Amino acid sequence: MNTDDDYTTPSYTPGMGPHGPTGSPGFGAPMDGGLDPDIMENGGLVGKAGAILDDGVEIADKEPVIEALKTVYDPEIPVDIYELGLIYKLDIAEKGNTRIEMTLTAPGCPVAGILPQQVADAAASVDGIGEVEVFLVWDPAWDMEKMSEDAKLALGMF
Image 1: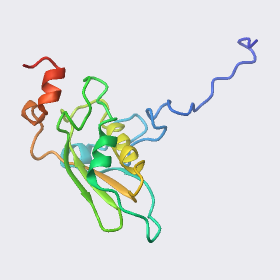
Image 2 (image 1 turned 45 degrees about the vertical axis):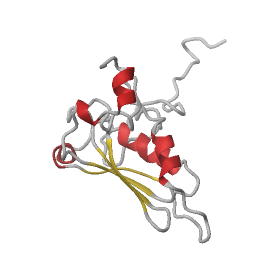
Image 3 (image 1 turned 30 degrees about the horizontal axis):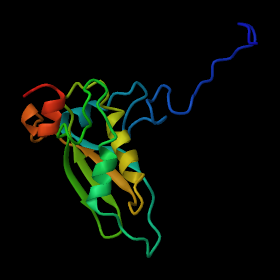
């Protein structure tokens, strides 16, 4: 049994902690979980994951990556980020390296420093995907018209 005298709070707990659910801040994110003001204004590289694939590895199609992206949720909205329309572009290159362009529901989104890294991690978890780079873009601005019909239905918008 631990007492106050012999209990030490760990500085890092896998899966949680000061940098969000993945245990690491988004690329370019300061320790408080926000993004660099320049990135918040102009966009840019905000998440990296994965590794270079060995020669001969079969490259994944977009569909498994999309399914992986559907496991990432904005914690304030009970709909995944793909159905919300936050993913603007998904390109898988010849060697499996992947570029994702995404936006946020608002420039002041409180999970701006975490969500893009979760997107990178989800995409990189797919077999046949190499290095993943996630870029934050603001043009076009996100609005509710970008949501899928399933997302609108889940949010009671019909």
